[in-house]
Image (cartoon, rainbow, N blue to C red; front, side, top):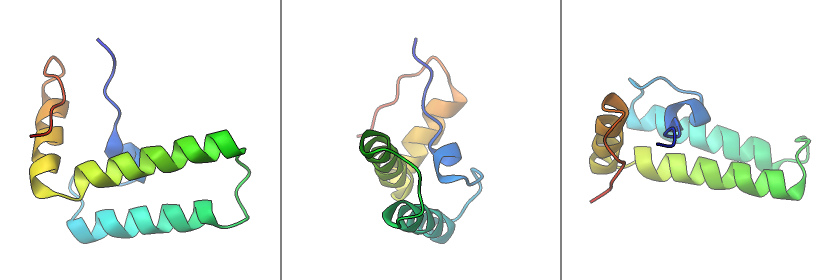
Length: 82
């Protein structure tokens, strides 16, 4: 079984973060990537932005976040969003 992606680690936040903290972390990281100061190649940049978007999508909604957290707590449970 593939290891699940840790969306909290991608955003650099603890699991106890509030919705406001999740949004702030996402906004901060996206601003860093949109600036000219990053050293990523185009493909790496696209992959990083994709991961940030996935993490934000999963964690920004209470229902999706609950499903995600449930799947993290049970490694044998596949991740499913309803």
